[in-house]
Image 1 (cartoon, helix red, strand yellow):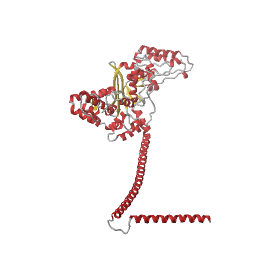
Image 2: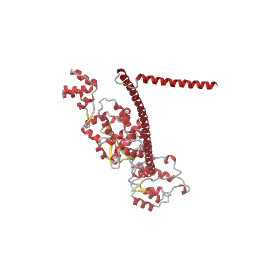
Image 3: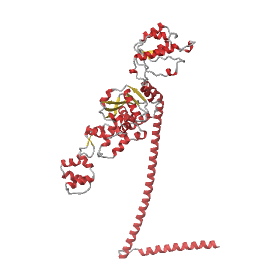
Image 4: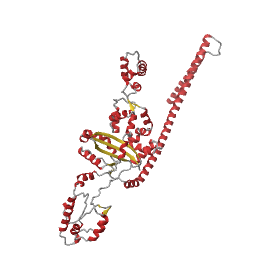
Amino acid sequence: MYDFIYHVRFIVENEKLNIRIFLSLEDYFTPVYIKTFEALTLKEERSFLPIYHEIEEYLVNKHIVINEEDLNLFHKTLISFNVPLPQINSVALNQYDDDLDQYNHILTPKDIVFLKYLDGKAIKDKRFNSWEEDNKLNTTFLREELVKNKLVTTSNYEYNLTKAKREDLLEVVKLYELEGHGDNKDLIEMIEKKLSTEDIKKYFSGSHYSLTEKGKKVIERSKKIIDFAHSFFRYVHKLPLEEFHLLSIKKSDYDFNGIGRLLMVNSSSDQLKHFDWDSLKKDEEGIDSESVKDDEIINYINKVSVNYNQEEEPENDNINEIKVEDLKEKVTDHSVKEIVIENESVKEEELNNNINIESVEKINQEEVLESDKKDEIEVEDLKEEATDYSVKEIVIEKKPPIYDETTEVDLDEIYFEQDQINLEKIEAYRKKRELYDKSKREKLKKDLNYRSNKRRKKYRVFKWLLYMIFFIILLIGILYLIERFELFHLPFSVRGIIQSLKETINGYKDEVIDFIDYIKAYKND
């Protein structure tokens, strides 16, 4: 299974909202969305929703890498506009590589596909709207950038002249009082011959987009992704154009059909879980650990200790003892992750308090020992443990990101057999499809041959029948001419032949009548 990771930046810098999204596959990467907006966009729902519509496909059911500050800003914006939160497969926090930002000038896969689509289109072509709906990308700014980067131009007056409408050509002909008529091709030839280059530039510049030499080179190197953009893999199976682009670079020996099948199998693996947005809400609602003073934390610990000491317990069985072994498990990497003191008699409100403790520089071990005299923990053991592990901070460990290498390895193992089955199914379907297409072609070929042979046979019979009729007419005509002009004597004449045929027919007719009369007389008897 291929691990596609989307690296997301959603940050306000210098009163500008910068959204940068890169896609990576192992050591390969490509930008997929690079845009800058005014910071006020985050406060206007009408301005923000079209932007979110463009980037949503790079978040839903994806593995993303994003800084925590960016994620909080993005989450806050969605909540403020009541936008449903996207189902993200996993989030890796604070692992965004800032070095990616230096590659924001590279064309995205959608930019390349649109560059090919743009060639030959009029500036005010209405088909841009349908392309934007299909690809979820506004093209107004993109067209300006492509012209600015000299990948396309609107100044190719010779090309624009060939694409001009008839009414525009007639307008120029009428304006310059040119004598001539004909179709568009004739009008174009007349304009090229009778008008100067400056006049042609004046009236036929800025009407259509055409590729520059630089743009043609980009298209020439991007045939696979352009073929994939119009293939059934993309539209039927809804496969991402950007993931195809990276996989086509990694699998350079595959054609777009083979890469499409790999993507189809890769996308068929269902994810086990999604990112929990509620965990982000809890972090936002919790106490800001950086603003909590050390004195307040110590006072809270002392308060818990006093309450614990004042409880009147007849037996020690109701008190959960803290042993040295438990302390060893809690203390790692010079920090205590969690120390939980449970007491059945402690009030429910005190147990439900969620306090994030970030730093405590000093803890008075003597006060802790005095408050926990009823516990079976020896002072010397506790001192040794505290000394060995250099207890300086009590922190609650943040949850690690859902996405990590271990998770991915497990997913590979879980879905390995499923991927193999899917590949076998696809191969079996391909073979069945080939057999079906082959049999269908053979059947169609036989059907066409049968119809052709039948038609050919009828035509042959009809042709010979015409030949025979023509020959008889020709023969009768020759005999008539010989007899009429007495060219030479024949033992028979046309009139005699006709008379003989007439007598023969009458003879057969009389025999048929006699046979019918005989049958009638036989029935009467």
